Image (cartoon, rainbow, N blue to C red):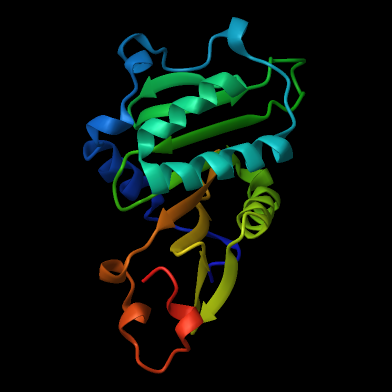
Length: 200
């Protein structure tokens, strides 16, 4: 279930809840005068797969060291935006012709239980999810299966990785969330090998 993307009707509700519980640490100074979308002069061409890896590394760091660390994305060309769903670091391609694809990438972490979110065009969601999972693995975390759930463990830490979208949304969301013993029932199981409990 965790390995692929599914339509999830509740994602809109969870996003709304997340925006109401934003940690002060997740609001950078740039948010005070941030636009609601990336201005035309700040749009740039980029490779979505490459930026998926950049966003994955940023999200892992955010979950380890706190949402303030996402400000490093500014050096990679991201722009802080602020809308109804909170603060995001976004990268958007320039608009081309009427039927040209416009790639988008957004990263945000409200410092709550929904973890760090990566948003991409919905039709690229499965592809990007696979890239994110590959980057997490490349950084030293291994995927373990516990029943119908997956976890990524390594470096003394434990993460949940999932993807979702709704049929009415233009974007897919990929979430990376650091889990502790308090939030993972598998940490309390006695029938699992020790290496399955890394990060508990």
